[in-house]
Length: 373
Image (cartoon, rainbow, N blue to C red; front, side):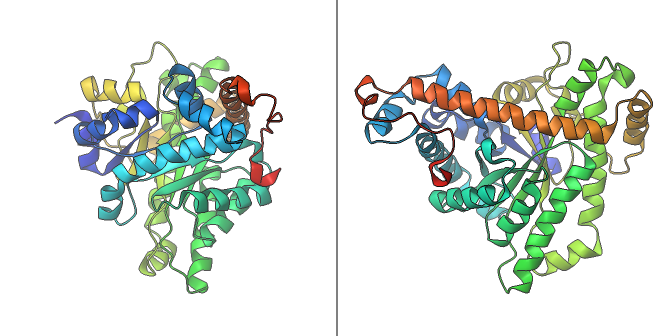
């Protein structure tokens, strides 16, 4: 049994953290589903920047949409939705068989809206309606501005991937927002079965430790933080509060392990995937890491939900002056900035492919989605 199939057997979903038009049209994604038990897919501006830069697969579509008068921002959304609805169709059988728990694809909302709650809500609703796709999640950051948006969007029936979570406290805020949205739907007599995942970024913790010259406990800081969050998630899903919601028809907001590619060259290429095996969770894996894990990955052991070893490791970093919450807040801000930079770069790449014939007819596009200009 391949290591990927073993993860699937223990109850962990594997979602590909990559997309490209070639991946979809060549049949490669279908092969990954069949051979490596891939059951979902996530994207972000960095992934699309790479996909559009590294191939010519999007060039004709971009030229046509520019000729039709599209701005770079609206053009990108159309391209992404064309890809993601195609991918969603591939996962539709899994989505239905799992009762809506698995088989999702994700679309990132513009990171330029990360600090604007009303604009985030409006844009997420617009994208959800535009996609008209039952297994597409809208990615919203779990920062201070995103938390009230998440509650409101869940109440409105928009499935959400809460992204850029780094600590237990950030995770709890996002999970509480999901619960409040579901509870409001129940009180309003609405269907409480709204999909959501909480994306916890793992490897950036070890990158931060390395940059801070922290060499403690073999740089297992990211895995320790993941273990702490996993313990809290298990406790929440076993609580009386969740039992009440699930009895009303709600489905769990699963933890998703993101940022699972190694950030240091001396790390094994399957370092995080080997160690993050945990039932009832999701792991997103870059394409290169997926292939490496299928070839030589090993499921070392199941992640424990008692958190004892994790707290020992985290205490060691704390004694060395690396505050968990301060670092988590900084990592979240850096993540938003990184995605914002990638969003701007992505639209610049798209703009660079504008046909010369449309340059004089079209004004310079805004970097904001058209719906909020």
